[in-house]
Amino acid sequence: MRVLLFTGKGGVGKTTTACATALRLAERGCKTLLLSADGAHSVADALAVPVGGEPGEVAESLWAVQVDTQRRFEAAWRDIQDYLLRLLSRSGVDPVTAAELTVLPGIDEVLALLAVRDLATSGRWDAVVVDCAPTAETLRLLALPEALGWYLAKVFPAHRRLARTVRPFASLLGRGEAVPPDGAFAALLRLADELDSVRQLLADRSTTSVRLVLTPEAIVTAEARRTFTALSLYGYQVDMVVANRVFPAELGPADSGGSDDWRRGWVRAQQRQLLEVGESFDGIEVRQVSYGAVEPVGALALGAVADQLYGPLPGADPAQRVPAPEPMRVEREGEEFVLRLHLPLATRGEVAAARAGDDLVVTVGPYRRVITLPGVLRRCQVNSGHFAEHELQVRFRPDPSLWPAELWPAAAEGG
Image 1 (tube, one colour):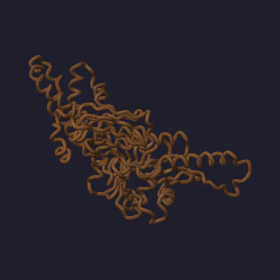
Image 2 (cartoon, one colour):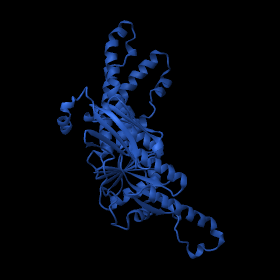
Image 3 (cartoon, one colour):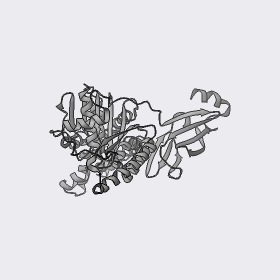
């Protein structure tokens, strides 16, 4: 099973690239599902065929689906929504307004993730190609499983214990509805378990990878660089960068003369950006798709895009796995443990880290990740930390109160 996530700044052609990749996989005999997780749902427009809320075969060995978040919301969130509706009704809120208020912000993204998990693990397909939302939304989407899972695991149990204590007194005062019922808590716990399984699927580097689509323009390239760093922070692998809508470097005979100076200017500007892209994403394959004369709509035109990306049939395997090291690892050096987190393209001034209990909070620019420390590091104290060569290093020493000095060598060997 392979899961390929395509994202990029809005308008760069990520949907086209995702569709071309899915078609090529199907043409090679791989049972493939093309899943639209972008609210715009442009997959149907690119394929020029209808695509519904359930997987339907749109070509030989190719199925497509648009995630129906409303239906999934009603199925997965009903217990919690019913409680909130009752609570708002008791407060005098009219039913229509109450229904709007109980559609929680970000729930569409959560349900889209669960849909990817459900369909990818169903066993029906060999590959799942996901047309994700533009980069900003995709980063929020991919950060959700760990962030929300952390909240449900660390904060939520205390709320549940408090509710159990308060509920009898609230009932005596006629305010029992103000305390969430066990059914609502059970629904949230199920959500925590499901999000954990989503995180495991998407962070499995043997199964899942992200492909960044960009156009060779300064603003787009800058956003792609930031996205690459953020994806590394969250532990996701980028295995390909697609530079789309590239003007041919050589002008044909019809392009000679001063009338095409604007095009020459674009060629020069794009070539400069392509050099920067190659340097920025060193070690990751960068593939190019030329600017076509017409929009690539329909199977024939998308096949031409696939030819540029992967070569004429049978061409290269679009789902080929690329070996990559884990972005975070823990190593022992003498009497210290060192946590290393690879953060490509990050600069020293935008990286910060702080320990909070059993967690390490890492911030890179506007992005933040709360990392639950491995058991061996929870019994240690932070000794030092620094960022160099695109790697954050945090050094830990044994906490004498948790690990007596005479037991440290043996305990360290055992992890």
